[in-house]
Image (cartoon, rainbow, N blue to C red; front, side):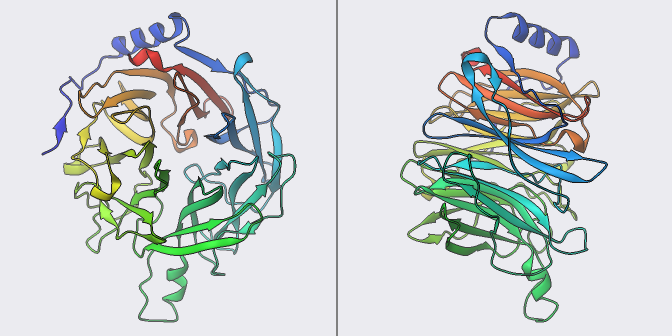
Length: 413
């Protein structure tokens, strides 16, 4: 039986406005972080390294030339601004997508890795995952390498990457079976989930299949526990088109047999483009996801004290009419902050909400009104220390500009 948060879902716009004003007037609850550019920006992502450096990656696309540029910047927290963006790479043959975008990751030795998607053929969904690494904190970047080992002109993407043993571990959707099936009737044409690890020099260390049938275009995510167990979460796809959230963990050089987080039994004939997110704290983990169980849009979160034993029964998150597009950060072994998009009075808002696995505390704050179109992308959150969280998103109402906000976590106390 699911735990239900006992709170009225019908929130009036006036109540939201009160929250917005409260956030703006109370000292150090929400503060904007300046990103100064002379060009459009979109598809932001965040990462904080073990030494406390916070990185922002984003794309800028020139619509007239179709050239896209991938940038990164580091946070100057004292002055509430992002340092001048640095160019990583650019090209006119990238696959730039509102839901499938670059991610920057740092190891423990001033090393950075970032991925992007590059077209591999004339078909719309023929593209490769390209990775670029830097051993000097982004001052110089190695030549791009292909993350996957096949040469099929198929879809590869929705990459998640973590720092693993001072190297990099990625999980991603891989479409090679769709091509192989054309030549071998024993192979089913379906999307798979793969995991690949590599070092800062671009050497592939481990390349394994995790799940041989998954949803075609939902985001994956990765977390890692204190005892060094990576966990991946993703949307599965059964033979009868049930597309619930599954997980697998990497232990003793193998990925565990994929298991369901919860049997929502959401059956849908197409991909909802709405994947899960996971975060860890010590050896605990929590995963948040969107579902349309029983025809109603819902958000759920599940906690695990030990991933070997799976996840506890999920908590239904109080939301009005959620669009999903979730992200998560654990702040203790029993509490997580989640971000998502919610519709109230026909307007979309970014919300950040605290969920406690024991008390069911679900206090939330409105970050900003946002476009409910694809152009607004997927907002991301990132804890930078015990007291502060950064939220970033694409402002599609203002010529595609990346916006970021600093949130004081004490708001939820």
